[in-house]
Length: 101
Picture 1 (cartoon, rainbow, N blue to C red):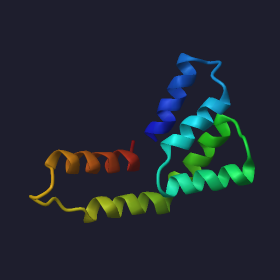
Picture 2: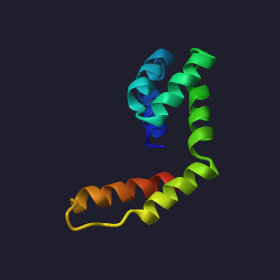
Picture 3: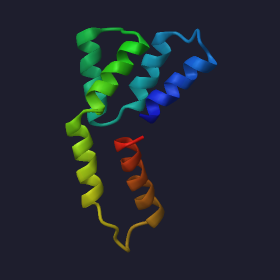
Picture 4: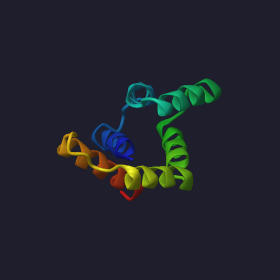
């Protein structure tokens, strides 16, 4: 949800920002499964406004299944002494924040 907050902040700073700029940001921001999802949605629905994309992102990534997967990832990830503690803590913090911002 940090991405949504970031883009909403752009609209506050620059109210006349064109939607195609937002599309360019989304195209580079999504990685892995999210990138595939975004590409498929763009092929199906074409160019859409930021409010439409915002609602689709929330609908797709704020549902119970997604939250459950993040919760399970958080619970199953155990710290190991051979890993960097900072990276592990940051990863866990991001998981918690994505579940309950």
